[in-house]
Image (cartoon, rainbow, N blue to C red; front, side):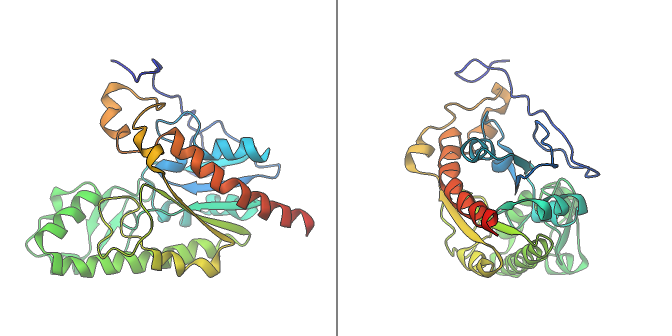
Length: 279
């Protein structure tokens, strides 16, 4: 087995749990007894293949513990349905919520695994009725299933897309309703949150600017970080992975993009934390 240009072995993510939650997060485990900032998110927040993901970089800038609750391939459901995690968010000085893809959550058309939200469990009778010509037993992952449905019938697929987008907004309202403190909504990706009709092919899938704007009144701030051309040109430079993991690493944002996210988040969080200190 070979490794990236830095010659390092695969990262030790120091997996840990918090309280009664069954979800594994990236360590080292942080104490929740002192003031902290919580980060809810997916693979980017977790920092797959990145030695110092943006929650670590923000912690270094703020001097305040940042609890990384990023979960690979997570959807909103993994956080909204876990009382332990929403309690951690509720007790944080500020909670950063990464904008997550809309396909990784249960909805009227299909259900997903409660912790591994990218795993397709089963279709509803409604979805089977709309796509009678599809054998859903073939699918294990949401993206595979949805990509196939879109190819089978773009017209029928619009109904599925509309449901996912509506369900995403509803799930986000539900999650935000359980975190009464300061919250920051973070868009972090290779593209901007435009209003493409399908919004597939680049994470977060199906999420549009209109959907984010629908939440602006529910959060303390919205931070958009589109990785710069310079960051994306770095490819896998500075990332840590085995040769077998190279294809996956090539699809992800690297250390420079994480630095850009931290630079955008730190002043917003510093301002919110300053306001809290004065109250």
